[in-house]
Length: 127
Image (cartoon, rainbow, N blue to C red):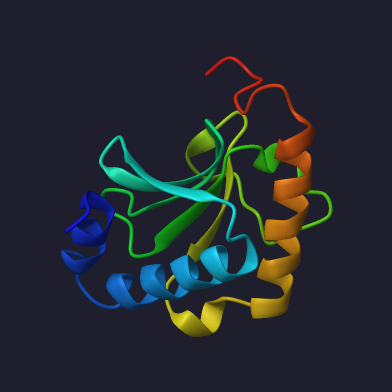
């Protein structure tokens, strides 16, 4: 079993269902993305550039769907939040499957893909 699959299987509900649902939307919308297991969490990359990662932040009750270049997308997609005062990453916090607007999420994925495809590197701000 791949480490990323093991990661999902080991999550408690409702996190497991939310993450598997988000994963299916990501991979169905952008099949060219590479799913990787880095820093002990799932990442979705364009080549070597990370675009999205899924995480459960310690002490939080939601799945953090984080967009690496989210700061450049938050104006068009106000659902993206700046959690934990991150300089560049913006994310969607999902407490249940119903919290995700499927059509808006697909549009966000496509916008993030277009943006990152044109970028020389994913991390453009100092961490």
